[in-house]
Length: 529
Image (cartoon, rainbow, N blue to C red; front, top):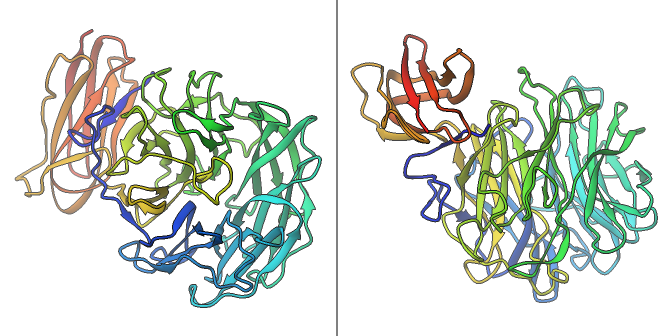
């Protein structure tokens, strides 16, 4: 069953769709900025730190982009000034530790290896490059334990792929803001004739560390065939490893049509830390094709674990466009917001033969059902970037959340050079279209129209509370079983509209109920196919 709730006239899954979220660049410049990542300060929700792989002619570095006012304004530079400047090679991994220090991991430049720099003054100055590991390494991903109750509070980790046989995932950590790092230790061994690629790490509420990665073929077509997973309960010292938690069919290729760009199916992972009914549930998304629930073109596939990684759900297709329509959904990034909503962004060309947009798919029920929203307010044409590697225009995009807003970051070249863009998404209004901000005389729930309907109908309601009120709007079938939550959030006074889509539901009588602190009303509607 799939039920789609979209914002009236604003977010429709069609070629006529347009977004409600204005897009802007974090740091406008004439330098190319790709592979963006973004994180939030662990104790100050107004501070965000983003980075990107920056390229200008033969010079390569990592961008440093800061906001100290919740994303209203940004400052920064396209160069990390940790010396030597010539030994920076991209794959940036930004993190903010418990003391508020910025740590930036990255590849080496003229000397291969994995490196880090630290700033104690919000990017004004940086320590010299610290070599965590030498030789050929790939795709570092940082994480930090920011729970004061954890025995490993303040420990910052970095995981990556060691590019020598058996191509394992390795780890190092720092306990002093990157002044020095532990010796490198190996997490897994890789499956036979496989390489472990694209690792990502997350830390649970009790300090348990989780790492996931793709297990990719070492021979053509080199794509990802399953997901590996490891758990550490001693601060990253020892690991319980499962090389295959579930099968996948990743989209890794050097020439994805129609753009002829390099893509991958690397996992993105996050953990619910809300303290609610799904606390410590783990979520993973990848880009896959030709293996259900993915179709014959790249789709975003979601799996979850409700028991700390011991067992995993069947896959769920995240993007809600038509199956097997020849459109690409690639480079997913995931974050779980403070309300437990699961938010996945990705690059998508469903509305064009070749141009791409950024989409958000959001689930408020643990990943069973998803709603799609267009995020970017313009289209762009992906293309490979000279100096970034064969076919490369960036291997990832990113997303975080703070102050009840989502902050996605992606790179596109609509300005003529690749730049990092964002479009803040206010979770208090997503999924609901405000018709009027005038304060109504009272609460009301209107009859849906049309009624009967097939498959879509509109529900209007009014909120009269001074300031704001917590509301829920839910749909039930004739037996009283909940079909969908249309709204479960704090909402300011005004008049609102929500579209309900009954695609996939049987014909019959349904009921929708609006509840707030001082109001409840239920109405009946008929789905007639």
